[in-house]
Image (tube, rainbow over all chains, first blue to last red; front, top):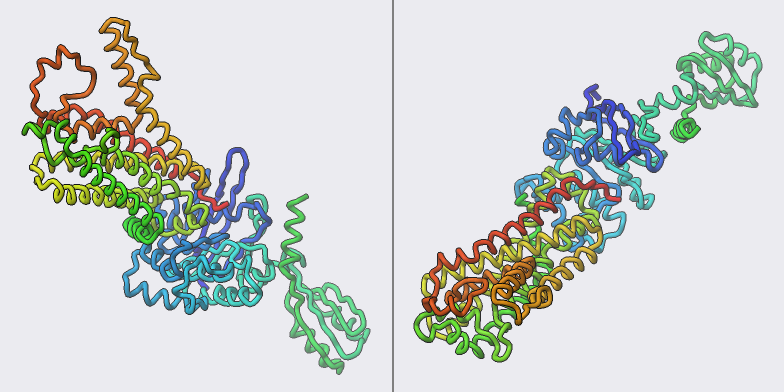
Length: 313
Length: 311
């Protein structure tokens, strides 16, 4: 992962009448990462996405998408960006293949290229057999998958997915998340908006939480929970075969350890840095069998609820 | 944009709508030909072709059913072209919204005006095909029936008639498209142009209702009243189109407006030449063209400013 930004915004603002939907929004998405845009309904996620694509003009502020300004050079942005709207629709009378051909035609792909890419993307989303079925016969899940195929056919550098998993069954969700997780390897940045925190946690490298048009927090997903909920500290959980007060004292005296909570065979150790190696060494040296040791992970729910609650107050 | 034109045309030619409209065109041509068979003799007399002064071939398009003098091919076309135009335009934009394809379409590398321009051009091509078919069918079979080939001037007049009919169709399509931009539901955008068409069609027959001619008044007052009547009637694009094609297809018509019998006595009973015919309906043609342009321009501007949120 390099540190070039695929999306950058500066004080991005959008009003509908007197209502400010997006309010001085600043955020950036690194190239080749999966970025999750979270937020409650009406937080301005879709409006933000539309501004990134140049489909809605911001009231003020700057947007750069892959180095282009979507308001000045919308075609350049749209040529390399794929967008899957929240509720995607197809031309009902056309088959899956014909729908994709039209999009390929709009993207000025050659005929041979179109054919091979259609086969390729339909294969990816598992719709090869339904290639010549009219889309009016498609189920919700099949539409969503065809939507992904539709986004991928132009081989985009940036993919923006608005609620991609809504309405899918668990198997479909898994399949979709696998596809999304594989995109960065193909040189493609992904930005997805979702309410499904578990899914976001599974595929996203970093997230941003949008509440009332403002980005309340953003950052890499692995450090975010520790920094926001845990106050920047590590919580290391140790399970041993037998409880030992002496061991607790030894660990307490270790440099960097702030607190140890022991209950039964478990210890919960709060530290400044990741001291798993040192702690494991001490436990083993004290001749007490070590069962497991791990850093407690904060779930995205914790982070989300914390910020969501704060902004509600 | 041409990708959109291609797709719209392909959609259109595969649709039931196109098939039905084409049946309508065939029906109109059939009616026209039947009228030729029944009424060509009267038409030839009216157009003075029988005295070798008029045009025989053009009489095909103006021959009417005996007893129903207004029902000829030109009149049938006046009625079905708006239907075709409205059918091509009424769901152009709002079907993309209800089908939720709008945001997907606009996130492709196309300018937003490419969408509406593409749809308009595709509609125009379809209308041209339909009108062309109807005119050629009637001209071809009419030629077989009467056996008199058209002169070059008749061909040019027919061509102008063809062009004006396309403009007339484009006007109705533009109106329907404007409705499809404004109204979210296809039902609304279909009903309003149809109601407008019915109003404008009925308008043609309401001249004496708007301004009754007072037969006891002096001749000057009567002429004023007739002129006012005509001006009011010309508000209706249907009437404008009717007048334009009447003059174009009947070279013997000396012009529009009120002619006193004293003036008529001095008129040379020759058909007008093409330039003069065109000159007398030039305002009509310009009026129709500008109406089409105005309606398309309004829908263009409204569409460009619309928010495209799916919800």
